[in-house]
Length: 214
Image (cartoon, rainbow, N blue to C red):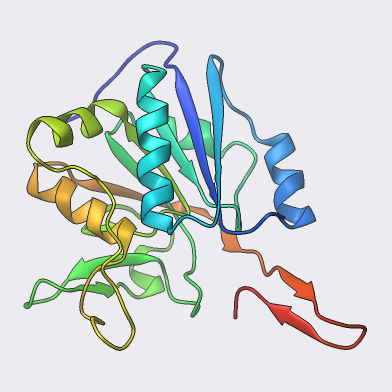
């Protein structure tokens, strides 16, 4: 179902893992086109990512926005990405980008109900519905969160994945998508909007650099 509106108020939510961002991301941030009225919220560590996202949502909802836009601080997006996402007039809309291992951050449920990555060639250049996405950049109608609160889907983000102890459990963004799916919301992926992870690191000494993204 398409939800249309005029001059929506947007709150941009940015969870930060580190006290710095790359120059590439900062340049994109400064040039990002956002239709007024809009407000930007930042949440910096050391909060876990699910707690950071949950706090951002709670704070964003106080602004009574029409749309909530999540954008990770290591995802490089086109300057006009927000307008392109808004053009779909859909409750949950995502861009296409690669996760840290380089796979498409797009998932479908297998027979066991576990999210599995969808091959790049199946989603690149396609506008299609998917079961879950990474939250590199996702535009969400605020009413989705209100429905979650009313129907017991709160908090909206929970990070359950652990590479050793619970590898079959969803990450916090997959968890949100699956909860939204249970409540009747689909996730629309715009595979025409392609972004990429930026690699940032810190200098240990004059010879060694530790990369924050492998």
